Image (cartoon, rainbow, N blue to C red):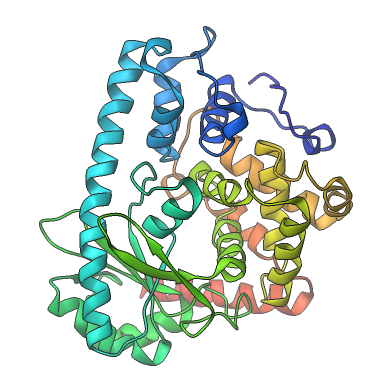
Length: 374
């Protein structure tokens, strides 16, 4: 890999090695939320088109790349592939929006508080419309005491429990004690649901955010209005969600940076400090430094940027995330290689200061490992 100049001032202090294909893909994502930079993007001659396409698909940003690349500036094979992927993403999002409308009405009729996380609502907030953002799953949050009733409702709507694989709703409570979600699928369709009873696998992160937290309603198209977290809570949640996987998917960071793009520097700082109050630990610190390195997100608040860069733990977490998202020439799912998630689990231990968190999280991970073998 060769060194690529990143525009961010943070990169001068935290140099990263990016392939030309990854650097250009990040620039394509950036195009979608930096209006002042929306000039036609030519496909560089030194890029490997096949590698660029594999990266776009792995990081699930084909729709964002397609929006940034006018057809006349792109190799034909890339144009056709991205056009096909983007059309498929838009079609799936239309289907997901319809399904979300059904879910909302059904949960409201059952008097179960429901919030939608990420997905269509985040796409609409980040990019002004939801069709370009790939949303593999429908993530919903319900109160913990409504787990069994929510599971029964999903079954009545045609969904079946797929993870845990035993599919036994009676054992679902035990599963959710150690994990934030269970996975559901509707046979014969691409629809999948992540049923959350909390926002993080560890109760130490975001313990105060739940279905009764401040919310906002988002138009995801065709008159479908979905509830999601309010801005401060959403900022904290996205930071925790990405950090818990060390930001190995560029899509997560692009979405996060897109939400930051229209904000004044002082407002970004305020949301960061509020996230700490909400229990996000060091997650927002890591998220902001990665966003700054890749997308120059803190350029409008140099004192705050310097404050974050002075934190040794923040630098370590930032480097760990950059290695996950851009440290390999060939993209690979962490779960697809032996010990592929080890570095991610290690970084999780540093997201909350103090020895107590590390010990309790190691214990939780051990319990999860034993439960997975059972």
